[in-house]
Length: 219
Length: 219
Image (cartoon, rainbow over all chains, first blue to last red):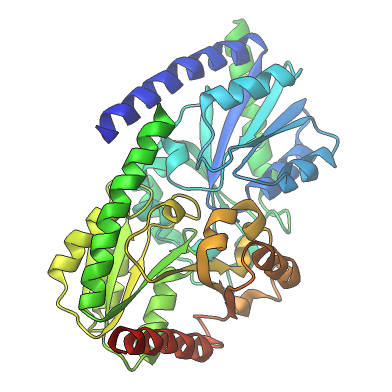
């Protein structure tokens, strides 16, 4: 019975996610659902990305509690809405719909930082264009094998904190083989939000996704 | 309705958890529910702990998928049961009850590694004596503020990977103040599973918890 109700919750979520997608397309926004473990560097990646993009941006910040992350984004002068899930381990389409009502952005990129969790966010479509997983080298190379669903669904995988590579046991070939086995199309970006190495390639790719979608919407 | 059913699931879980607790007490086991983000170092902590303890031990390994962690434990010659949750983001009392049937251990310490997740495992009692949170300095100092429930419930908090302190931005005072505000009684163990620094104090404390419980059970 737990499973049956869970499927009904997911089905209800999907209806709202489709509505979100229509709204986002009408507002000519590319929306990215950013998923990763606590401390993988999701907020740092967003801050670095915002600094490099030449496209209007806004951010939705998902957290169980606190507004630390939203304050970091606001300090950059970028519109941000904080969603506190109050215990729930993932964002859902309804909470994102409410946040969209409060954001005026059009013609740009909407970055959504999900709750720090490699598991539950994979099951809830928010209406995004695609998901990006952020994993840190400090977490170890076995994460794609242990948390397959989210890696299977991601359009891109960011390997963050490569500045720590000399200090941690991270087998990059093993990690990448795990991603490839689940998801041969995923683009992998090794980078460091701390030093900035690799941020350029990631930001360029993201901007290209926006341009591609934008052309498609108007062709 | 989602909330109502969730509460019924939790209530059903609690009944089995109480049964587990009775079985564990009858078998004179101290049971520790070890919770942390993916890659915080839960398995490394268990391996280091097993090497130092002079008490019979067994391990239950919880993962969505894979048996990497169980194989690491088995390589140490310690009895281990792998639970694959197949998607579920936490262990529950029923899966632990099934694992207990397969473990012969009496008079010792049972270490249960929960699924890598700082959120959902906090809601599900397994019948353990207490919870321990493992957080890595690479995750940053704000985790107690962002994931309060699990820090509130922990008897001990392990700050792992202190060998990385010079390379990462981790404000230990801020982290500890966050733990203290939620949970003034929690014992905090900064340590490194890689270098072994701090493992002795943690292992001694754990063995004392076992001795204290053991005396209580027979007094």
